[in-house]
Length: 603
Image (cartoon, rainbow, N blue to C red; front, side, top):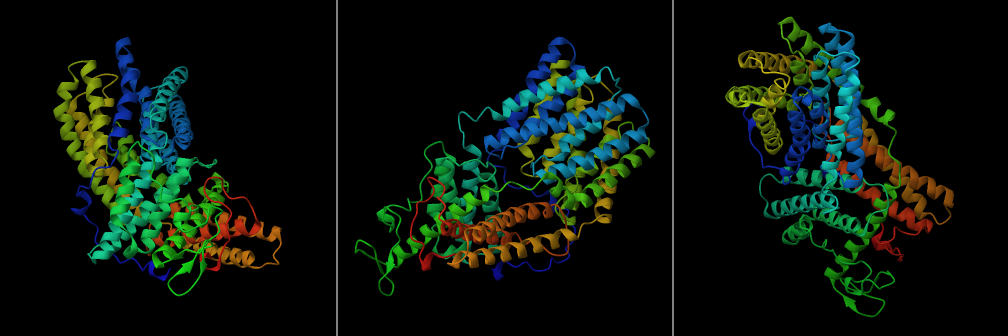
């Protein structure tokens, strides 16, 4: 585990050109792009037909919820989308009521900044995923500066809710056709990343550390996806868990891994056919008896099975892999049974993030007002979008935001004459910008912002056309103000304790694992002690993952020990398996069967 220990992070120059470098598009870039078009088009076209296109900003608020949770299994996606829609409606309600009660711009900016802070903290605590709080902040901030009356607010909220329900249906539409699509994609990415690392390590190529880090991240993301559904896993999901374990084995021993086989599994997983099996641990041809009893040693480099057949070193290695695979599957099942931490406890460590967001957004809005801006929420949203995992990434996001918005206003200047031809042309331009933003943002944030900027400007023209020059000038000024003030706030408000929390969580897991292993190995330990040790270890693993995810949104002097986190989770899974089996609990049906736990297979 020492090889995974992070070193102190060196001070690096803040990048400019590197921040704009294009990456590979997402494997499923078309899914969110098509989803948002399918969610936005029907409500907007219906309002256009009714001659009430001025109400489209409210339906679009609900439609944009279709951007969320594309990486989650459908059972988890249904809950996540529902909570996103409720969160959007809550923020919109606060904004509409505030806009109805006062027109004081300073008060409205303050309300918008507080909403942005709450939305940032809650999205980070719940790990809702991209686009995170930015869309929610845009919706609520824009609504603050639209003239309202209290009597209009319920109708506008009803429009947003109806569009949100439609967005939920759009997000869940692929479930009947490909019920395990998100899990398959995450597993395939983990296998491909493991194969890439194995090839790099075997060939001694440069960039091995980067490939290893990417592979650990992909495996971690795959486990997060597979564990997102806490009920009893299906046969397909159990098979996918075995494949992710195979990816972990490849990371642990890249020289012994077969990259071609890993990629073959990945291709099969990404398809629509049957998920490939890595080998049934209970079959005789895999070196185990049908009842699960393992082989026993019989000479150097070989062993003799209960049936008398001799196995070579390759067979022994395969048997060991199968035993470890079954250990981790039982450990994963034990971890799945632990309830997640309460939201309140997850919000506590994010207090500095909320303070930073509130301060940066408020100061950006105030500065925009001081410069005479009519839409200070553009500066507020720009500041809210900057905050990333560390100061270098926050700087990169600021560069990307500024460049993308500046190019985007030029695109808007070119598109505006077409959009002003009529309502249908305006709606079609909005749909095109929605599609382009989601199709391109995976390659680089600035490239997606090139389409997001004209989209935001076109939305302001839904109630009525406005001078293009004024919109362009206001957007440029607010972008520069928001990026500058937001970055200064990120530097001023830090949370250096986040890294220490990860170290403490790792220490807690190591101690809990050692304690559980001692209890499991002690024949005189009571069932109550074993249960307490098992539950303590499972809770520590869950807390480690939550702490690491929260810390990933901060910056500090040392790098986040992601590899240590993954290795600690993997070791804890095997120890959990030992405690479950030592107590005599029945294993998770379909994942493993009772077998003799030999010394050579101990965690």
